[in-house]
Image (cartoon, rainbow over all chains, first blue to last red; front, side, top):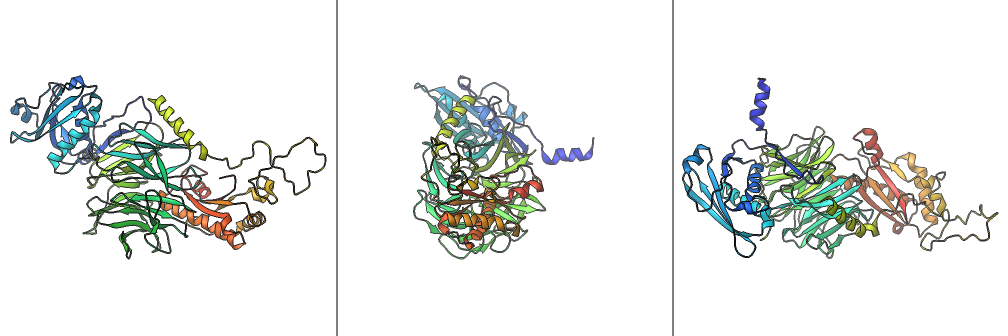
Amino acid sequence: MNPRFLSVLRSAVPVCALVLGSSLAQAQLAIEITGAGANRMPVAVASFEGESALPRAVTDVVRADLERSGLFKMVELGPTPMGADAAVDFARIRSKGADALAVGSIAPNGSGRYQVQVRLIDAAKQASLGSQAMVMAPAQYRTTGHRIADFIYEKLTGEPGVFSTRIAYVLKSGSRYELQIADADGSNAQTALASREPIISPSWSPDGSRLAYVSFEAKKPVVYVHSLATGQRNVAANFKGSNSAPAWSPDGRRLAVVLTKDGQSQLYSVNADGSGVQRLASSSGIDTEPSWSADGMIYFTSDRGGSPQVYRVPAGGGDAQRVTFEGSYNVSPRPSPDGKSLVYVSRNGGRFQITMLDLASRQTQILTDSSKDESPSFAPNGRMVLYATEVGGRGVLSAVSSDGRVKQRLSVQSGDVREPAWGPQPRN
Amino acid sequence: MKYTRLALSLIAVGLLAACSSAPKTADQGAAVEDRSSGASSTGVDSNRVVAVDANAANGSGLAALKDPKSILSKRSVLFDYNSYVVKDEYRSLIEAHAKFLVANPKMKMLIQGNTDERGSREYNLALGQKRADAVKKALSLLGVAETQLESVSLGEEKPSCGDASEACWSANRRGDMLYSGEF
C-alpha cells in the first residue's frame, strides 16, 4: 500500500462520518467529525434499562456526544441493557477493551415522567466513579442525553462538558437570512429572526437568555438585543452612521459596541437598553471587534499602527497595548474563558486561518488548514473553538480543539452557514 | 417540519415588512412630475391630476434622479483595492450631487460604503465606513449641509457581484448614494 496513504491514515485518525441531521429538513445542520484526538479513551455506554419506552434511546445521544468530542472511542456492548444497580461482568467489559463503563435505569415515576439513574464505573479498578439522578419527560430524551454526556465527560476529563450548550449562527439561503439557534451538536435548529437583509455578529448574553446582533433591515447596521424566549427585541445602538460588533460584559449589564457617530469606527459601551453611552477607547484609526475577557480586559482589532492587529485595553479605562506582532493582518480576537490564551484570525500568505496565542509564553499556533476562516468563538470550557469557513464555495461551520487535533464540521444541505457564536453553559 | 419553518418565517417577514426594502429605483407607478422645467406644460389634459408628495423635497430636478440621461441617476463611486480616496474620474458626479443637495436642502442622502469579501466581516464594515466617509467629505467640501448627509457601511454584506474574482471584487469596492425615499 502507498506509504503516504498509510501515514495519512495514521496521523489524521480519519474518522467516522456521523450524520445526525434529519434528511427531511434541508436546513438542519449535519455534523461530521473530520479529525480526532490521538489517544482516545475507550468507553462503553451500555443501553439503559427501560429506555426503550422513550421516543428515542437516551444512550444514542450520549454515545454520539462523547464520540464527537474526539476524546473518547466508543466500545460496543450490544443491545442488552445494563441497569444502574445490576452486577457488572467486568471480565466481559475488559475483554471488549473499555476503560470506563456507564450503566443506567429509566423508570416511570408515576406522574408521567421518568426517573433516570446513571452510574459511571472504572472498569480496571472495578470501582464507581460517581452516579447521577434526574427526572425527565419522555420528549426530553435529547436534553437528558446531553446532561448525561456532560456528567461522564466531567468525571473522566476533570473539565465541564459542553454538550448541553447552544450555538447561534446565520443561515443564508438565496436572499434570505435567518438567525438560528441550535444545540451544540447542530440538532433542534430554531429560527430567532428572519430577514431579507444581512444579519451579522451575534453575541450571547452571559446567562444565555439574549442575543445581541447587527441587522441591516434599516438599510444600515443597527445593534439589537433579542430575548430568545419571548422574541422581544430592542435597539441597543442606532446612532448616526454605523453601529456594529456588540460584545457583552461578563456581568451582562453592558455591551461594547462600535459606533461611527463621532468619525471613524471607535469603541463605546452602552446599557443593553441603549442608554448610557460611553467611550471605551480612542484612536485616529479603526477600532473594532471588541471582546471582553474574564479578567477585565477588552481585546479588539485596530489599524492604529498601520495594519490591523489585536490590542487590549482595561475595560475600566487606560492605555491600549498591542498584543499581536507577527504578520500584517490579525483580526477578530476572542480571549479564552480562563483568560490565558487568545484565538483570532490571521492572514498567512493570502489564507485566513484560526490562530491560537498563549498569552504567557507568546507562542502562536495555526489551528486550521483551511483558507477562509472567520468569526472564532470559544466553547465555554475553552476546549473547542467554533468558526466559519468555506468548503466547496459554501459557508460551513467548523470546530477545532484548542490543540488543533479534534475537528468537526457542521453544514446544511443547501445555503451558507456563517457568523457562529458558541453560547454559555445553561443555568439550571 | 418545513411548513412550520415556513410559517414561522412568514410571521417574521411580516414583522419586518415595515422596514423592508424600498427598491433602489422606485420608479413603478406614476412618476412625480417635474414642474419646474415647464417643458411639459403644453398639451396637458385638463382633467389630469398630478400627484404631489408632501414629504418629498421642495426644490427642483427630482425626476433627474431617475432619468438615465441625467448624471444624477448615477449613484456609485468605485474605489481601488485598499483605497479610500474618491478618484478624480468621479469629480463631476460628486459635483452634480452636491449641487442637487444644495438646491434641495430638505433632501437627505444615505451613503453606503462597501468592500470586497476578503477578511473579517466587522473589519470590512469599518473599511466600508471609510469609503462612505470619503464620499461624504467630498460632498461636504462642496457645501452640502452636514444634516443632509449620513455615511454608513454595509461592509462585505451587499456585494453587487457574487464571484470570487478580481473583476467582481473591484465592482464591490464602492460607495452608493441613496436619496430620501430610497432608504
